[in-house]
Image (cartoon, rainbow, N blue to C red; front, side, top):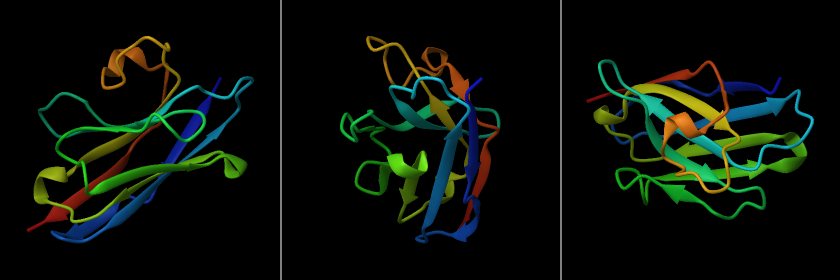
Length: 125
């Protein structure tokens, strides 16, 4: 069973930055795609970003384009989400996701097979 462990969340003031990490382990075959999602209280889980196996195929939600960057270190089996110019509306639990069918839509939570426990990000104004 693939295991995903997130870290790096915390509290920050608006305009600040955080870097989330997601370490992947216990896999037989390396997940094809990795993604970041978030869920605020009372809202549905939404896609934030994804990255392909070769570091390409990076996609972002419109709300984070230009401010967030997804990257990976394959040697360390780790995916990162660098979040800059954070806003209060970015406050949410952030989840790492792994493995989805090649033809599925990246931003659809139901398409992803494995999930981490989440790391909380709180942005104050």
